Length: 601
Image (cartoon, rainbow, N blue to C red; front, side, top):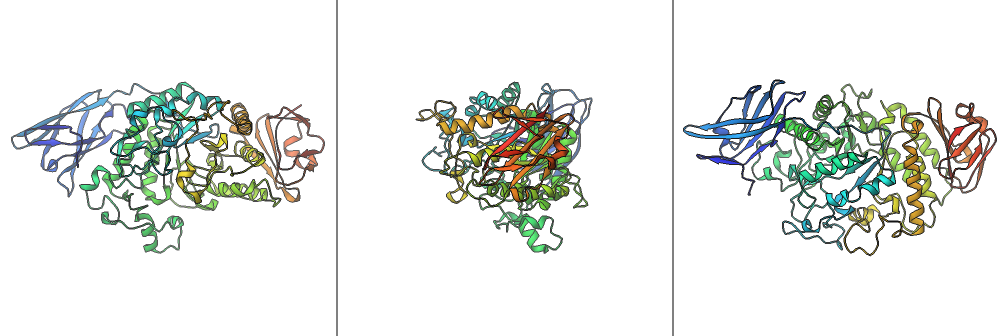
């Protein structure tokens, strides 16, 4: 195993110090340094620097590691802190960079006024072909499970496309190093938590991408993975402690029983198998109960926030980790960055389980401090609920799921989505019209919560889980040099794709202007026998009324039932077509159609 050379002098060698730098002026004055080098645990360490002192030095069972805990007081100033390592007559001075916090942009968080656009970087656009083939792993676009060459530069080249579409926030699947045999194109097998994968670019390029997004009025959400690392992570051949990896560092498959996290009847052995089992053989399960590892991971997230000024984090496999660790992590991040937001992947089919994870939940005596949970329950219902070919009244299932929002501490701060990189795409192969697409988008972008779109939805990209994950993460046509079709442009899209793109753009750009949608409360009505789901969003004197017809026939509704919404209004203007409807009279909603009405007089 070859590690980056850091420092060597007089028989003292340091291969790594992580994090490689820190900042003055942080609210939390404690900094943990992971120091790695042959026999470094036998060496002494002293510091002489104004405002910085050693709180403690923890030597662990592996003598190649030291965990140094520093106190960096508010009196400390930016500069290079000399770390004096010594072993008898042998001495080494390492200059540790302590930087000024010069960039206070970003770290803005995200909320219901935002729309997240999820990108799998390897599949979106290839802006730099020189980094396609690295570490003997070749890009192969013919293989859906191989690396294809998308990168940060490719995303940067299409920021104007995203802004024009109406996106406010970009969420990227993990960009950290995945130096795995075979490639690991998806990014979820991290082999260096502090380094952007060279096939995507550099740390500096990621920070620049975030700055450029900010300059264009967009935010950046970074996907992180604390549940596991890649089996080729640099520490796997020389673990700091025996309990650094769960199950004594040996592969034991998790049972995937996510509900054991909150099941009061769960057996101890089944719960342990869930929490400590590995996600896969290539993904060793990290033990967040180890105090040194817990602090390491928390600091890693704070380092990325401060370094790149990202605005949010999406945490992968959230429920697979230790609750107390996650609670501590969220609290420490929010203590440092009060406006920041974290969304946890709470993959459950029922609302109660996701609600258990959200901050201030009444379902558990402990506080998770997690602001945003993912509403998978609503997603699964929506994937069936907007079927354009059947008259099954399934919009009532959506109504009933939303009606259970009393179980959430904050239903307006849930991440809602029609699909993502791990499930069948919302768009179906062979659709001949956009009824399902338009109804689904109309609902997603007007109901409560924080909407998330998956790249390619706007061009009707399809793919099913049964076809394999690689088919869910297809290349965006036009993102690669030499592509025969460029769907980033109007000319490269079919008439139906342009209709879909225009519809989404219209909704996204309008949504930014609607305080009722981005800040308002939700009032809804049961579809009953008509199959029409009606709801309103209300903020002060601004009201939006949405009508979704799940029926195969036109439905005429008497409006007196909706007096809570329309009593102060005479008309509604459809935000897509501009059509004016008299809301004091009956309204006919076309079969499988929708109206999004801004009410007025």
